[in-house]
Structure formats: structure tokens, C-alpha cells
Amino acid sequence: MNERVAIVGIGWSGYRSKSADLSYKELIYESAVKAYADAGVDPRKDIQSFVTVAEDFHEGTSIFDEYTPDQLGAALKPVHTITGDGLHGLATAYMLVKTGQFDIVAVEGHSKASNILTLPEVTAYAQDPILNRPLRFNTHFVAGLEMNRFLFETGTTQEQCAAVVQKNRRNALNNPKAPYGADLTLEDILSGPVLSWPLGKRDSAEHSDGAIVMVLASESTARHLNDKPIWILGMGWCNDSPSLESREWGELPYIQKAAQIAYRQAGFRNPQGIIDFAEIDDTYSYKELQSLEALGFCLPGEAGILTEDGATEVDGELPVNASGGSLGMGHMIDATGLARALEVVLQLRGEAGLYQLEDVNVGLAQSWRGIPTTSGAVAVLAN
Amino acid sequence: MTENIRSFPGTPLSEQDFEEGKILFNYDELNGKFSWDTGIAIGSYLAGLKNGVILGSRCSTCRKTVVPPRTVCEWCFRPMQEYVPLHDTGTVNTFSLCYVTWDMKRLTDPQIPAVIEIDGASPLHGIMHLLKEVDPQKVHIGMRVKAVWKSAEERTGAITDIQYFKPVKEV
Ligand SMILES: [Zn+2]
Image 1 (cartoon, rainbow over the protein chains, first blue to last red):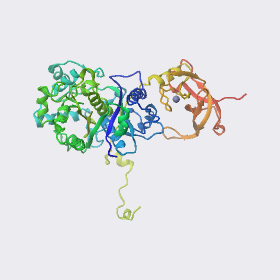
Image 2 (tube, rainbow over the protein chains, first blue to last red):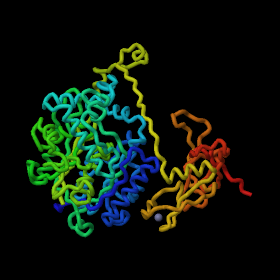
Image 3 (cartoon, protein in one colour):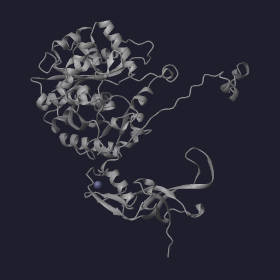
């Protein structure tokens, strides 16, 4: 029951801006085959429970969770779907193993963002139908409001936010999985079209299609399956109230709390000096800075300065989004948190290739469910 | 109903109240547009229908033949790479007589949805479609039926390229 839990298999398909050659089922199948081969398991015999992450409005199908078992090898097995971010799915799979009832559990998340022709309008439908939706703002306005208050409260500048875009998209040039690698100047970024001031179009991650599957196992099983198990030391998640009218805009209390929960499980309070690198939310440039502060890596107002000083570069003190993050790899809607966790696993295994960091033992993955939510999750992983 | 209904009878709403704007009424419509990528298996199936052929796929491990084709066999999780043309005839596995339409209008003559086990596919594998040219009272489980196709010029690569299934006249 108190056995540790490890990630023993990973598989992915993507990431690309379009994936017209494969259905979502085929994308998922491709990832599942890789993850099961990586873990050395047969889903029909060995995997005892399956967790998927999906949102009906993103799929265009009501009760979408019914469409997930066959491509995962999960027919006639326990399966359920989480409507949340991919890290919520990982947390659920983690808990299933922790119950002691299941030794091997798989978790799946995917994005067919390219198939949602009216994604901004679908996202806008997450707003309160009586109080907010009738005002008819483009859905990015929520990020504009948040960014403005964050800059105001912390003294962070638009240039510092642009430095996040520059770093992550440059990092993506070394990641063959990342479709949005680019070498941009700060001027290129700042002179782009405005979305919802102070938020520019280039502050905002483009979307990509792809799928991710991970296999989790209890400690005793993990040691037989994979010689590089990656241990889940702690997982936390947290929600603030949804109201746009009375929320903490400058800080992210729900990320602070989620981090505290994860850190407590992992046995520390302060991540500085313990966490070697992080893959965190950068749906929008400022979110990376705001999240770094909420995670306790620095004080409010410091993340922008540290970024400008290069502390979060691949050769910096705390590499952040060495993979390119969502800005470089594309935002994968419900699968975004799993994409971050996958990158942490690759680094901890020493399999990140051109963007492999040196001497990393403990990594952090963090996600946000996107506008207009106040929903986030944190995972601490170690090799 | 509680006793309170006597002292707090509530305020009934009338159509007129809505028309006169006495009620907060908010009409909204989701503009959700999707372009689902059909992929290899369903893409091949739809291309087959356009050519007047029902395609299935075969698992080389458990030897099941399924329709519509799939990329993976859900029973043994092996890739299904062999595509096979099937017949356009089959047997009714189950059916229903539907007296209400999709958008909830009453019907006097029922629509007849049916699952048709296609000849050449493994048992229990079939197409979900509709039956026509048949007396609803005479439809039965086990009935032999055949596809009625649209003309080649009208076919677009859609499940509706088959207009319906009708009974096979047994000779
Ligand atoms: Zn099979």
C-alpha cells in the first residue's frame, strides 16, 4: 500500500500542427504501442486499469470517454476519463496504483486541436453563461487581464515575458518533437500583433496535435519491468474558485497549494536546491514567470529578472522548459501536462538527446488547465 | 408537494412574460465546428464506400474480420493491416421500430434502425444502418438483407452512400 510508484513506460505520437493522416484513435494507438513496448507489458494481460484525459467539447462528441478503450487495449477492463489536464490524469493513475488494487496502470492524453475549427469560440464557452459570456470578448481576454495585473503587481516587463518566448522557441530548435522552434529577437516578439493587450500573439502558444501514453507500476513490479524507472515523489493539484470577478490575478494561489502538496509528499518544503530542472506551464509567456514564482523557485517579481539573466536557460541554474515548452512544442489542450511530464521523464532517463541536461536527478512538471480556469497540478519526479 | 405550496404558490411563467421581456432570457448558440481526421482505417472504409465496396480489416493473430476496418484489433491488440472487401449482404442481428425522429417528432410509419452482420465479417461484426422497402411488422432478427447503394455519381465517401438495406428476396 505504501509502495512507491514509478513511470515505467512512455510513448508519444506527434507533435505537429496538423495530423490529417491519422485519426485520434490511430494517434493514441501509435503512442500506446510505444509505451507498452517501452514498459515491456501486454495491455490485454498485464495492465489492470486505464485512465484517459479528454473534454467532450474538444472532441466534438458527447460522452467522449466511451471512445477510448479499443485503441488502448482496454476493452473489458476498468477505464475512466478525467476531464482535466493531463497531470490530473497522471495523478489519478498514481492514486490507482497507490490503492494497492492495481499493479500496472496506463494513462493517456491526446490533442486533435487542429480538428477544432472554432477553438477560441469553444474555449469561450467555458465562461459563465449569464455573467460573462454575454459581454462577448475573445477568449484570450482572460489572459490579458491576468498578464496586466501580474506585470502591475510584480514590476515584470513585457520584454521579460518576450525573453521567455525567445528562450523556449530557441530550445525547441534542439527538440525534434517540437514544431515551433525559431530563433527570434525580442523585437520580433514584441512587434507581433496584439491579442489582448498587454498580451501579444507571440506570447501565446500555438496548438499541436499528438498523443501521449504512460505506464505506471508499483515499486516491486516496476523493478522487473524497466531498468530506468522514474519515481513519482509527489503529486498535488488544486483549484481556486472560478469567478473572474473575485480572483487573485497577480499570483497563482492554486499553483502554490498544488506545489505545497507535492513537495510535502516528496519530503521537502523549498524546491530551491532540490529540483534540478522544471517543465512548466507556458501557455502564455507570462505564465512561465508567474508559475516559477508560485512554485517557490523565487520571489514575486524575480522570475523575469532571472529569465533575462539566463538562469532558466539550458545551461542556467534552473533550466525551465528545455524541451521548448508549449511555446516551442505547441499547446496540446488536455494533454499539455502529460507532455511536460514526458519531458521530465526523458531528461531523468538521460534520453533527451540534443537538449539533454547534465546531472539531473529530480525534476518538476507543472500544468494549468488553461483559460478561464484556476486549476493546476504539480508532479515531482526522480530517477 | 409540500404544504408550503399553499402559502407560497410561486409565480407561473407565461409565454407572454418572455415576449414582454419580463423574464431574463439569454439565447446563445455554440459555434462548434469540427473537422475530424478519419485516418487510415476509417478513411479507407469511406473510400471503399465511394467505390461501392464495404471494406473490413482482418487480424492475423485472432483471425477476426471486423467492419468498419480498424488499425488495431481490440481483442489481442495486434495491428490490423490486411484490408478485405466484404459482401454487401448480411443478416439482421437486431433492429428497432422507431416512432420518434432524431429531433423528437412523432412518426406514424417507423424508421427501422438495424445492426446488420455483414457477410464475410466475423459473427457479431456489422454495420449500423437502416432498413427500408419492408413491412415493419415483417422485419425479424435473422432476416437476410442487401445494401441499396446510391449511384456511383452520387456517392461521396460517406456512410450514407448506402441508402439503406432491404430484404433479399429468397428464391
Ligand atoms: Zn486480434
